[in-house]
Length: 292
Image 1 (cartoon, rainbow, N blue to C red):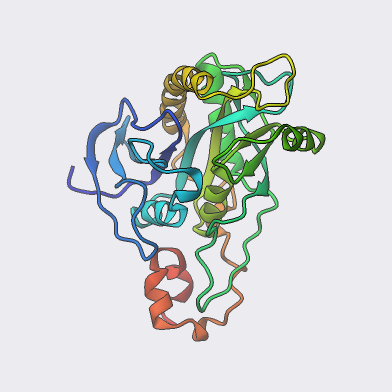
Image 2: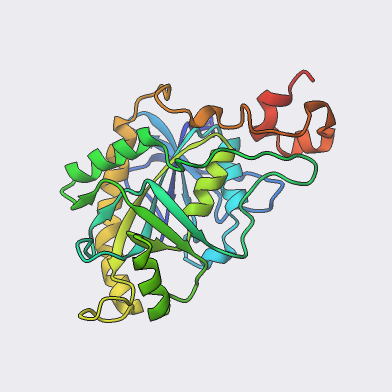
């Protein structure tokens, strides 16, 4: 495979550090102005579709959620030509009827992170993208259908609360989040979704339930052993569902507005954006500043 570019991306979370069924895989090093991604993306094909796979925690799971270089990860995928990203992540359930090993396909987020870089902008250019509906509706429908075809118990929507971590919730926090109507809790996806929107990349996630957090009085508190057992069961399902979703996704993404998210979001006059910033954010800003 001589061409390293790909139109679709997959970000694997806890338990999904490689992607079975990726044909002709090739590791591709991508330099970014934000440093190195978690791992060099692996570019290959699934049924003839060019796909770039990235393990968000690293292939040996060496990165805590707050240590992940989310900007470098999304920038690297954008630089490779990726327009759509499916992700998979481990989450805790905040609802009685959302069981371990169920799958939730969230449509909303609540942000409880506190120490992460979650924008490409600043340093000479201001942009404020719309984030009212933070996940791509087209990709969400692909994930729902794919997970159901794989026999998963699928919840078609839900609110994902993204906490800082790496420690799990206190019992008081868990009860508070339940009172907000949260469906699942995790540590990664919201940051990716914000950056994907700024990069005009469609983004949706499979939230794979491993536990009941610590609110459930009749279940054991979160433990690493329980998480690992459920992670292994969820990883195989995720790999199959993601492959199926890639194959089912139309090549044309005209049904969503993700690809034009920056159109009216850049507030800095184009003439005032420095040459250095134009180069640094070339894959993201390019079509809005070319020729000016």
